[in-house]
Image (cartoon, rainbow, N blue to C red; front, side, top):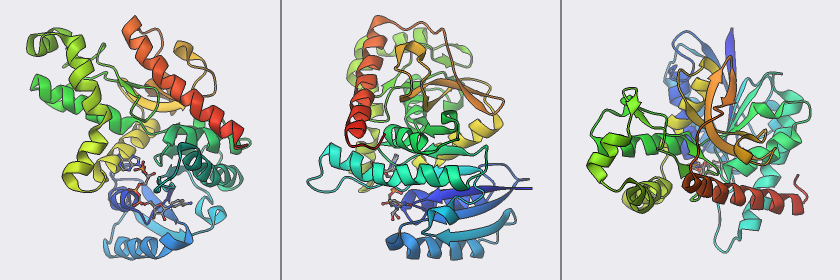
Length: 329
Ligand code: NDP
């Protein structure tokens, strides 16, 4: 048995960082063979073909097959896991509506191609921005595929939040849990520390001892640092984050397939939990149980946190309304 994994935008930077880790077994473990389908637009085919040659030279024992194509029917044929990375970046002078329209033109047909060609229990993870709304469009175009099979990546935001909290508390990052991201994968996202634990104990007292006024620290330091981390990386590195985005993508898919023992974050289709309008792809605290993401329900949400969540959800509603007006939904 092997798993067929499709990566769109496979000739791009995040794609390049993903491919070799998947082939090395970092996604599905050392015993699961993988078949890779690299989907690109014609301009990206050369880069994807080059990556395929390098994959061959990696002599990965787990890698059964690599196929490169610019045809979505070929790219999604038999696909078990779809990583939708390729997206249209915002160009000079492009308005938000132009960006949504350009990406709707990519993710709508991809959703339809997934429905027509992928395996019946396909799992789709959208990385390309605007990720939540792109996932919404792909799900709406995938007749017959349950919308629960479409997700948007917010794990990078969560990883950033856990890492910032760990650094502040001077503890190992893997002891920090329960720092979910709510809302949109954008500057309005809400990284929520109110339920955070360190080594299984509430983080709140330790945090207060270090930062003093926790609400002020959240407002002025923590939330902006997490939300603007992408811009910080661009400033320091000279180009956008790549390996950390790829790593978070692997975390998301691995947890979806193999399950979680605690909460994490994912953009999933809302069933109305926490008042988020049904049908929006919104990030929630989630657990993966029996191969399905389930929203962690019944959490106490303060008025302050609710305002933050509502602001990000309002942005998702605006994006949905914009793509509906464009006839993409
Ligand atoms: P990247 O591989 O760096 O990024 C791909 C997408 O991931 C972008 O939409 C980017 O959003 C998004 N992204 C999400 N999280 C992050 C993050 N933390 N840091 C950086 N990006 C993030 O882009 P490249 O330009 O190198 O590659 C894109 C490839 O996709 C190209 O090869 C292009 O040909 C291909 N493509 C394929 C399509 C298809 O298969 N149909 C359609 C369109 C493009 P943001 O722009 O906001 O940074």
